[in-house]
Length: 288
Image (cartoon, rainbow, N blue to C red; front, side):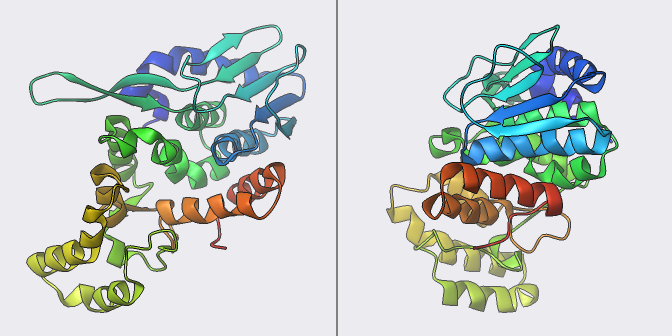
């Protein structure tokens, strides 16, 4: 299987993440994992926990903003920071921050740039720490969850999201299906989708030809076109490119929407912990 560090969007950070993985793998001290108590923080910290558990390395997890001056740690910075990863040694101290990279190459050879989020970097680092880890493999579909949450999809299409999504399809980590093919879609936040109409389309989806499917799905998604949100790029992903991992009944976007609801019910640190724990133990986020 091709590693994430070999993917084109990861090229600018592959050297520093590979070096950090070597240092963390050979660490003789407890590693502190730090992230903000946010959904992005939980999605980024979970693969690192998985890697350290699979590798049998001692660690502690803390949902807080500031990193200590001493000790070995990995600090996941918020999405507003796009300064890229930074590593210092003795002890190993790694900060993961998003950065802008080349995602795809246009027909005329022009570069299409997009965000390489801290979540993507965390998954790449985790895989480098423990390449054969069972938990890491199970969490692989969540690699692009940070890009799903990023505002890039609200303005135009995200070439990094597209490149990584295609790479995950190629290695069998995910399937990309249309919304009616999702066994248990979560559309609670998409009030413009008629649930009865979706059920009706889903029930006869297998009997429709390609033209019929295109027409039915376009009719189902049409009410969104008169709204300012979601963007055209995000709408296309929500209707035509739903992401399913192995054994999933709800797609990536639906699980993320469900997870976001936790922050309305419990303190932020508790919500972040529940999401990270669910990913670590089961590889999915159950619907609320």
